Amino acid sequence: MLTDTAIRKARAGDKPFKLADSGGLHLYVSTAGGKLWRFRYSYGGKEKLLSIGPYPSISLLDARAARDAAKATLREGRDPGVIKKLRKLSHTNSAANTFEAIAREWYDLNKGQWVDRHAEDVITSLEREVFPTLGDIPVTDIKAPEVLAVLRGIETRAKETARRVRQRMSAVFVYAISSGRAEADPAATVQKAMAPMRKGRQPAITDLDAAQEMLAKAEAEKAHPATKLALRILALSAVRPGTLITTPWSEWADLDDGVWRIPAARMKLRLQHKDDDARDHLVPLSRQAFEAIEALRTLTGGGPLAFPNTRHAHKPMSENAIGYLLNRAGYHHHHVPHGWRATFSSVMNERFPADKPVIDLMLAHVPKDKVEGAYNRALHLERRRELAQNWADLILEGSRPAATLLAGPRR
Image 1 (cartoon, one colour):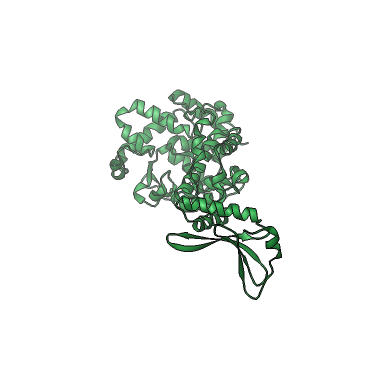
Image 2: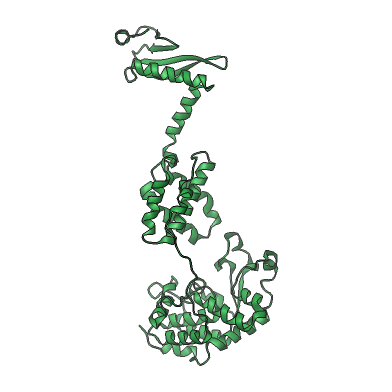
């Protein structure tokens, strides 16, 4: 049995030597005078050597405790040398296993499936909301209370954003679990603990008379003519506001067939469908829509975008510009730009219930029957023309010509 005195007195010699303790533990003394605790054991019928650490950093008592722990591992049927290597590897990889490192790895793996706008939103939300607090913490050390604390902070500003961030955090934890770097998803655990949120449809006026009055009031407000024309074309076409405001003039360069063809790349579709020409959205244009586009052409036709930003011509106008116009007309919380789709759908389905599939096509709704949706997207074009003209006649009854909006009151 070794003593601290014997260990301290041991001096280097011409050759390395060992000082035996007990139970397979010994101190290896090198020719340079270094002293290293080692444990000799047998596993699987083979002699093996486990390095415990240097003396005096590891005392005699600590070395014996490490030997006893290794023996306990052997009794469990495991190799203490392998266990030590795994622990060392886990410690070495801890920096690579932080939430931020794994989140960025998950993001790089998935971003190719997303449209650019969504991909940017995903990584920006994590960088802004999560990484500053949890980014440098190993995923195995993050528990439900830490996740909930981050989400509570977001909820005070935007409940919907908090829910999206939770979903993204959960996806990161699931990815960490599947790649062997975590065992639990605390973001899934906290889902039921989040603040309740009442979901509702976007506000929209669906009565025809009220919608006519709203359009007239908005067009009488002080606003840039391009904003008023955007509102009118939005009401006539029932396309999504984001699709309208990003329209390049090249799409309206040739409208001889009376149809506005919106490329699939600009539609609300899955990324894998955005290069499929068969999914282009066809918008038959009424006579009034043509008039509005021609009036707009005199205003912005010299640039690449039909609705350029007033400060930056290479960027589209903000969707908020149309919303603010409606708000000033007195429709805050009553009607939003996207609400024109609901107005069109409600009025036309009530008047032409047999044309519901055609009206859905005009709104670019995906049919429940996916096979039908793949083959019938361009059908009923003549009926769609008729319905588009019928809608324009209804919503603009008594309205002034589009060209007069160019000379109306400006802000």
